[in-house]
Picture 1: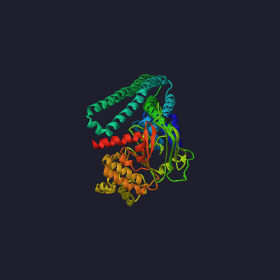
Picture 2: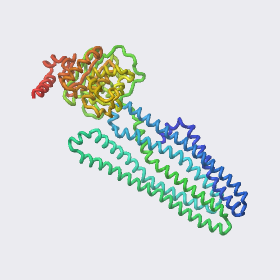
Picture 3: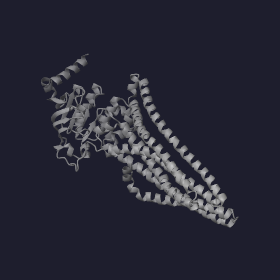
Picture 4: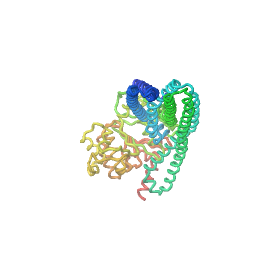
Length: 575
């Protein structure tokens, strides 16, 4: 935690110095108030000197104004610094997550990454804000209070020496019980987020299979665990302030008891007793402020540990330095004995895949479910990193190409078409930010999406919900295709992008794509043979290996696996 805060607070050194200076001035001013009040009592009230009371009262008022001004300005600087820290941490976590490959995202999990980027950052932000308002004040007030109390009367100093260690021991005991509870709370909070995301994303499946009672029990179990841990931590927290108040009240009673005896014997004046009692309360208040501060430390420490895991994780797929930005040819794609193995897997998913796709041609990839077709396509934009072999674009290994250059040459339509919250236009402009309305409509025309977009209220400005949940699966796929088409890339990757389309729409879409992809390399992952029958090359994958490469007619005669796929689909159509 200290490393993380030191690193991110360094740019705000001037603001932190101002906070310390202002809090120091304000706290010293507050320490002089009881002494002035004691003088008013002993020199003014007891002697009946009204002029002295007025003069000392004016000084007291001025010191109070100084204290108030310094405190307000210090809190303003502290709040700005704490908010800036939260902004910087969120931005850094966001940009770090954007560099993660699919492996890192799956290792942390989306719910945990969300919690770490929001709730955990907020815990650190709260800690810093509390530190600037309390932690700076507490030691100054404690040390200054002790000095000023001794200045008033040394005979009662043993009370301070007895009370502070007792209070420190109580706080230490309670803190050692609270720290593990707060760490456990963050883990259960991750679990609650995960369950909620699964239930919201899979609400149709939950209802279709009548899983509501089971999902309700699953959420209740996670919620109960979180509640139990939070309640346990809350009990320890609840014991904190009563313990402090008990010590404070007992010590106040002791001061009045023993101090009254000293006043009666003439060893101490009434004003000095009042000032000593005030300083003792200030000392104990400083301990209370430290308690409030320390209550934030366990959660903040757990949050910093989790956030540091994200920030310190180096992505498995690192960009080259420096990366190639100028490629000699346009769209030439080659796989040279490429293999892939998931981290920790016993067997590789892909083995020794080799093929070449030229600009102006279409390469189709077919195979049974689970043979690695999507993973194979994901190697091209480096969503996954090939474990062996080389993937080359225009003769250059993609590991050596600058990521922005690589991605700018690829138009990807993923297996699960995802749309962002916004409008139809804003989603299409993800592919090309500066696209005109004419370009948007042209892309929709090619993707066979113009008809239903024109029918939507608002047309291009029609709202799209997060994930595209307010449009059908086929409409979502066509909008995703239009998003890829509008950028006119050199390599098109269609990962089972036509599966939700009927045969007629599929045929019209493929016919509309031909003119705009005439000079580009097209890679299609498809389930229906009819979708890829006219491809220039068809790569057949079985068991992670390429068992056939050629045209539809050639493979039908020479590749048993491909022939089996054709026969099975024909039998399904006949049935």
